[in-house]
Image 1: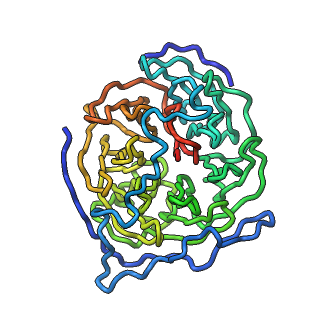
Image 2 (image 1 turned 90 degrees about the vertical axis):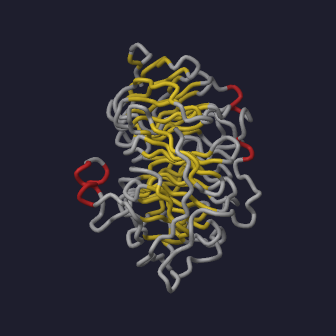
Length: 427
């Protein structure tokens, strides 16, 4: 990877809404899809309850309200302000920005907001992902078919590792496997987490595989299929697809029409015929009772019951709902609405408490919260920018100019015992 010498600087609206959604159909697969390479499917890590049929009224439960039993648990208790552990304590404080259109990785000093370095990458670097053991940051060169290791002590990239179609990267909760979300190939590639040698693959029955998160007990994960409008429930070690949740037949208000989505270009033009949902990022609520799934066609977040893996509700947040990040205290979730240039703040009960607007608009995409919890960093996907916001007021602190197509930005170091992947799904 070569270094490009380049200079470097470059009201809260309170509302609370409980919304029922009308359900015309919500199907789930009854059969499991097994892994290839001779892996034996197993159900031992599966959730025990399947999704119930819709009620006679055709209406699912409300998404907000009191937390379910067990809500006193905070799955992000080890991710509190300043709680750095292990290798993260020796990491240099930096922000890493992969630029998909420029094929570069840019490194920002968060204390000065200056771009310190620009490195050439392979094709379409999508996300910068901390390894399970926090020793390495992996740049996902999606069409370049490689992963680039970055030393978090120095911020310097190393030699590329050949890996096919790495759109996104996750790790099993015991650290024994890396899970490559091979979006183009419609499969989860299970690899050695250190060498990235392929161990086996799990084909998936959908297109646009990209984002995931694990349950509170780390026994299974939910993963989104952007181009098929579906969610998958997969067992812990990615040997079996346990369930398919089809979002396309569930009605929600204010969704972007298929015609409008196609005119936008980009990912929507790759949608399967008849697809009306585009699920993106997925995160577990701090109390561990629900998964929140951003959907940029439906302009809000789906709420999935984490115990039953059944659909619980839907919350409108804003145009192009794309990413979800918990704060450092486990009391709020930040939802970036990419097409609206806004960030919706949800409290622990998933009630909307604020809507932060970028003063001049923008396209807030992926990012993360600073180690001290004071700042939310987000890439500006279509504006060649990085936004830094105050997590207490929502005020835009700085806009930093970067190369074209910034995407899965990683703020590092972050608190937590280990990384489950993405731009810092820490536990």
